[in-house]
Amino acid sequence: MIEVKNVTKKYGKFIAVDNISFTINEGEIIGLLGPNGAGKSTTMNMFTGFIEQTEGEIIIDGYNTLKKPKKAKKEIGYMPEGVPLYTDLTVKEFITYMAEIKNVDRKNRKEKVQEIINKTGLKDVQKKLIKNLSRGYKQRVSMAGALIGDPKILILDEPTVGLDPKQITEIRNLIKELGKTHTVILSSHILSEVSQICNKVIIINKGKIIAIDTPENLEKKVVRDNIVYVTVEDPENKMDSVKDKLENVQEIKLIEENEDKTKKYKITADDGVDLRKNIFDTFAKEEITIFEMKKSDVTLEDAFMQLINSQDENAVEQEKEQQLADETDETEENKTEDNKTEENETEENKTEDNEIEENEVEENKEEKKDEGGQE
Image 1 (cartoon, rainbow, N blue to C red):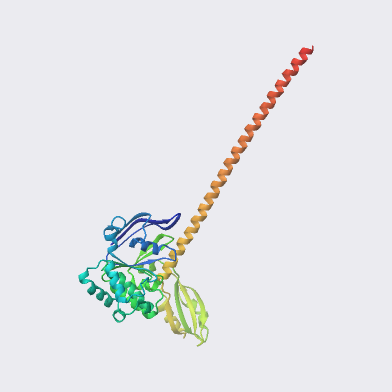
Image 2 (image 1 turned 45 degrees about the vertical axis):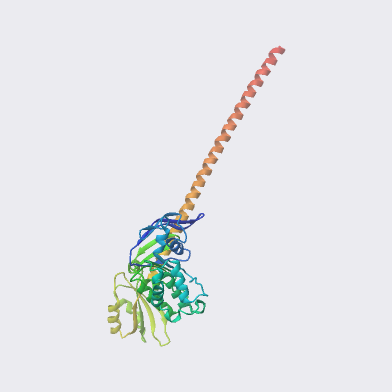
């Protein structure tokens, strides 16, 4: 459905997107992730044809965005961040206006508008002015504007930003439903949201793609200690000696003491070992009551942070190496210049010495001539 081939976007010397390539298949819900300034919005704006790439190709459903922009744009419904709407129009007027812009067939226009209003849950507010709507309803109106015209691809930039928990849940459910009939690209800073909705994630940082995979696979790749958290009642302080009775345990650390006199501990085990059954059996024998036991979970946020930090560290190392190489080159250049200077000075000294010797020889000759003449 979407092919991105070696795409770069430059603003003067600044590279906003740096030689990215990937494909998105029909029916996928893709999460586009990255920190602020990573290049997410620039990438989505290039998809929509709002800005042109400096290099590379973007193909939307078989249409090159530069060679056949109208046909490519017809396949896309775009919901920008910040919900830019005509607030003096009613909901129905705005969606009808968007239908006119997108050349929805006049015969079916009213029917299509009403269908989208019902689909996005706007039936009860369709006659209200947009400026009088809540933030959640404005998000729905913006999404309705993207949906009208029946595009194959939906691009949603931060669709749940600024919403309350109830509105977020409603928009998430709507996106899941739309994913059954559309290819969806979703940009969000809420990683738990992406993990719940998307079946593939593209992580971009500093204009470069650093990962493309499912949320589950990204979580599995995270290197993390094997940790179990337990909250126990231990009036006789037997936890101090229980480590020796648990196999494959590296450390037992007290995290906090609660008001009800229970204590929370962090137990770190060897990799690949599930301690929970062993903990349950051992603590029961030692008469330590377990109130809560939880294995530390790896989340998409952990994977995201590890990938971003790893790239940043590599970038710092490369910068240091480049700086060292530049300093080495500068030192070599200085040495070369110093050698040239020394050679030039040596040649100049030799020339001066030769001139002095020649002058002395000439003077001696003149003196001898003068002496001979006197004789």
